[in-house]
Length: 176
Image (tube, helix red, strand yellow):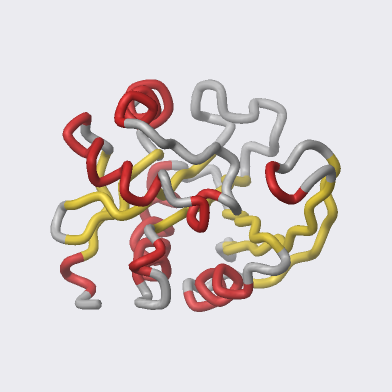
């Protein structure tokens, strides 16, 4: 994929049809925190309530069409984990299955990382979580410059994973 065609931008209400294509696909949503969206109304609500209010919930685009989602959580943002360490941000992503294996998620992360450090000069580390079995996501993170940090098991309600999920934690740390 030609990298000049890939961009990150805020979500728009007009993205509803494009988002429905990938957000309704359980292959895409099975490893992320939010549920599969199956109607235009759900997507519109998602854009209005989840994406637009948060400046670092951005659309991964090809030729300005939404094909995925990149999000950053940081304590300086309203409602984003205020108990967490102010020097750490969390990043995540998802893209439509038809775009898997083309380097798009890696490129999106590489585009986002310097901007995250710029927007939040107090942070020194960005962390990302990947499902243990999701080896493709591990490769994306590694190609984007993230380093393996640790593995962990979380207990709770994790959609199709049941009451526990095994994760791998990666980090991108700047040296001060």
